[in-house]
Length: 445
Image (cartoon, rainbow, N blue to C red):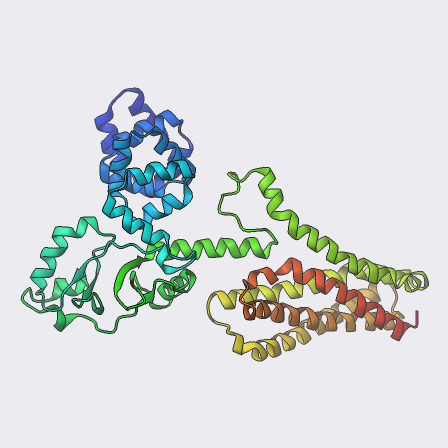
């Protein structure tokens, strides 16, 4: 694709280039622009039709959008903004620096600017920030023919034509109907006779992650958003819901790895910012691990009496951390999919304890065989100490892997912060304490 485009530019066959570009999906342009020089990007963009240019612009990364805006004349910028849907314009404004935002707002129509300002006023992470005000509304007394006439008249300006909402005079939703229903209905049929009156709405203040989960649960392609007086003010479409799910998943992965979430991609984040996003957690975890070191130093006499004890410390700490990480990952995943609720605490904990007993016992038996083979068949007491420690540590780790994410959820924090690094650090200390106390008790060291 890149070679063909560059060849057409080189030969100045711009009509052929336009035809070729129109066939490319808008979502493929960002990767294409990454491989092409800036001046060529501008040539390509200016050759696109107005409608195609707006779709492509909405798909681009913020830094590419900013470069294009800086190249645009005011007329070109206004043409792009006129073609963008309101939710895409709001996303653009939120990503741009202040000087670019001023220029954007200067080139937006006064009427549109009012709507954009209203959308920008909604709290972060709320449904209002991802909705669009461009939807098709119908009246219940319209006929199917009337509905199609309206769709044909204004459909191109709307985010979607596939789902239409039936409103009262005061803009309250009383029904929903899709184009499929309209197509198979008699053209003289009244909308009120074929619309679906069981309409699920969401508030402008609903958390956008909860909205995305509703799309997943009910398989919607669009959802109506209502204000505090239950009036329809916008809709959220499936593409916006997918973006939210992707953002939340990326944020959870970063938190689970003890990294402060960042909106920028890996390569576009500077080395300094990468270090800044990681160092706070690393310092905290390092200081927390000092406690484990202090516990180990308390049992120096045990090391001196039976040096072989040291060989099993990494095994026990590693196994405990892995057990905790497994449970915390499953619990966090359960929360994200709404499968696990806070009321399920005892049920989840009891299940994990039983899993820990089975896992711990299996590990203990395998490790006992290893001790008898590697060291001496007479090391029964050592095998008992290590085996009991493995069972207890597995129970502790899996309990913590269950309790800590649920505690975070109860405190209205993201459960992802209670993931592997934090749990592993806590379990390390517990493993050492259990191990050496059992060694003192059973081996008498």
